[in-house]
Image (cartoon, rainbow, N blue to C red):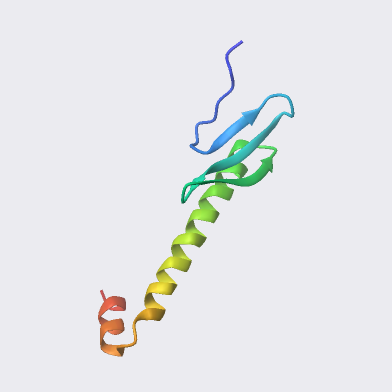
Length: 77
């Protein structure tokens, strides 16, 4: 029987427990996001995690900008 693998990076099937696990490396550390009944939910947890991290990083960049004109130029594209 062929080993069941995920179509998503960071999602693995744990045969003994019959669950999907979301885990990947973030900043050199293994990040565990939980066990899920289906593959799509496990992947969605990774997407949410990454979106949150990117959002926080962008907010931090904007908070460092003290010049209002510079901030306006960045936000005005």
